[in-house]
Every structure is written in C-alpha cells, then in structure tokens.
Image (cartoon, rainbow, N blue to C red; front, side, top):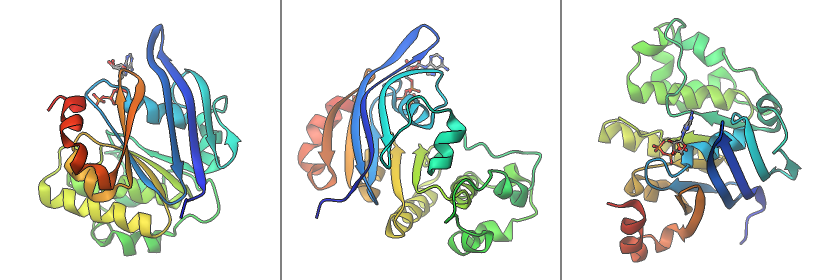
Length: 235
Ligand code: ATP
C-alpha cells in the first residue's frame, strides 16, 4: 500500500555565500519510511539536510512538510513543525552532563518521548546519566543525540552519518535503533557513506551527485543495481 507523503522536496537549491551547492534536489518521503541519501563526498547530502532544517541562509525551491511550505521559514519554526536534525558532529556539549544534554532541546510539539521512555530505548544512556557528555563513547553519543531529538516531539528525523567513525558492533546497534524507530512510526532521512549499512535499514535510496538527485533505488533492487551504485559512489 502506498504510504501518505510526509515530505516533498522540489527543485531545492542552496548556496554558501556565493557558492551554489544544490542545483535542484527532488525527493519525496512517505510517512513511516526510512530513506537514505547516498553519494560521494561533497555531493551535497549534508547540505540537503541542512536546507530542509532551514540552517542554510540562502535556499530556493520547495520543501513541503506535512502539507506546509517551509522554504521561507526560520529553523526554529521548522523544528516546531516536527523535524529534528542530528548533525554529523552530534552536538553533544562537553561541559554538560548526559542528563543536561538530554534536556537541552526544547519540546517543540506534543507527543515527544519522556526521559523515562528514552531510557527504555537507550538503557546504557541511563547508566551514564551524570557523566559528562563527551565522556561517552562515540556510539553512546550518537544514541544520546538521537534520544534528545525524540524528546522534542519531532516525527521526521534527519540523521547525518550516524555510523561515522563507529566500530562494527556499534554500527549494528545504530541499525537496530533505526529499525526500532521506524517500527514506532518515525520517518527518517539518513545520510550514509556506507551503502551496506544503508541497505539494512532503508526502504529506498536517493543518489545525490553534484547537488542533484540523479537516481532512486528501492532497497529490494539494491543488489541488482550494485554495479551502477559502485559507479555513482566511485568505489
Ligand atoms: P560529505 O560526506 O563530505 O559531507 P556531502 O555530500 O554531505 O559530503 P556537503 O557537505 O553537502 O556534501 O557539501 C557540498 C558542497 O558544499 C561541497 O563542495 C562542500 O565543499 C561545500 N560546502 C560544505 N559546507 C560548506 C560551507 N560551510 N561553506 C562553503 N562550502 C561548503
């Protein structure tokens, strides 16, 4: 059955100063879907997430979320609609405890998880509650960064390379976390370098090249398209 569309991006362009980086991104994500953005370094994947979150100054085109046009909205207003962003660098504050980090983002929408519910999802974070944020392992920091976004009430999660720099066993845990979030109805757009990981969590994959979406591959078709994908990714 076709899922209800939650996010539609049309002809999205973005600039850093004078530098024109996105030249027309088109994609669509259904409610409850997990979709990845694949592509080489510098293709524009991170910039696509930042543009959807409204943290790129100059952008143009259309980003429609739950029926609302957001291209002109400031990032705080976009967050209030229910979009949460976990940047690649995770944004954990070293001077704050795990608990303080968890409480940091304001609740923007009803329906956010309670701290108790977040602990149930991420038991090892509970054990580290009074530790300093950056004393956590990379995997724990990633869980904390995802956990605190769940508090805000966001139902669309934008995750930028959550597996970056993590050991294989931790990558498996992140994969299990993403599948669990999907089963609870969250919609996820994930930037990934590692398409083998992407294959374990996603419904569909968009290929980004030079600021454009150049292809879309259903997860079930990924193996059949492996040569093409290798060419796209230059691996
Ligand atoms: P990566 O995996 O390397 O992050 P990416 O596909 O996410 O790749 P982006 O980070 O979106 O790519 O970068 C797209 C282009 O924009 C690149 O050419 C990059 O050099 C440029 N760029 C990224 N951030 C900035 C910035 N703050 N100022 C100027 N140019 C930038």
